[in-house]
Length: 187
Image (cartoon, rainbow, N blue to C red; front, side, top):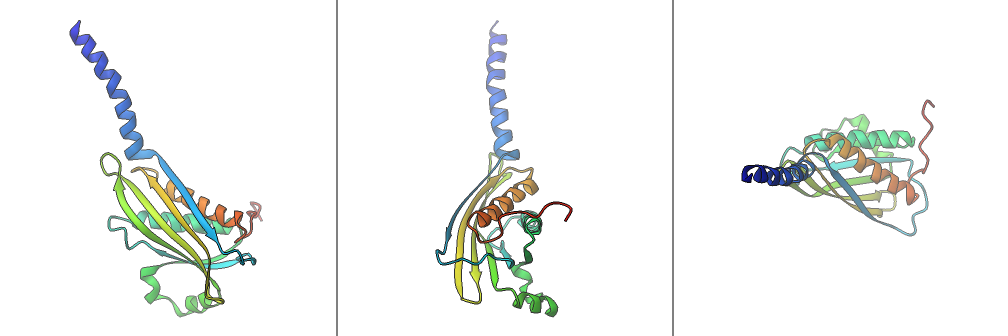
């Protein structure tokens, strides 16, 4: 009888622990954003350069960065916003024709990894803090700032980066920095 009681107690404890480990290390994600808009800003943005700097993340940041760039491109395309995305390390290798195109765009969105650390029970997750600022080069003023706190487990990082891009673009839309309505599909 004692063996069965021990097995029951072990089974009772093992199931919740397994679920807890699985969600903390592998699958769950969360994204929150705090922002501040310059009150005098009134003109919606229709073109921007997005600069991504993930140099503070010293462990395999390339995949989340690529996923984030792709997700931002998708979200901006839905709203018919012209954009150029570039990683900070490639600035010095810029094609002259791209540089000329970028020079015509007055708005720059800088996305910088402020903090990057491993998380979860086995270190399979990531916790990121992004600092985002939207800068108007014609007036030399920052028109919008945000801090994104995001964490995710080992799997589903592409989906996680899509949710970060979605939250970011939706907030820009809510605060009237970009057009609020995505263009209809098929047009």
